[in-house]
Length: 106
Image (cartoon, rainbow, N blue to C red):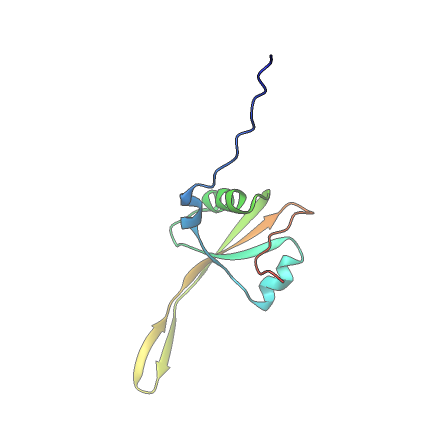
């Protein structure tokens, strides 16, 4: 009797979910999705390699490149009250041709 090795199911580590905040849903992001590029809001202290590994772990796709944009905070005013709109960091992730990430179910 020959023992057949079982395939080990890849488990998504909780750390991957701590890197990504939310998908960034805008008109420009929808246009980029047609070109296999997806936009996500990420935590400020993560780098490109961590973002790429998190996308591969969560969505099971092959990441080709990651670009990062830091959107600065903006000053806003409501009457005499002055405040700030928060800044954030977003990542544009390019995946392999033919693969797809289902961000919003149709």
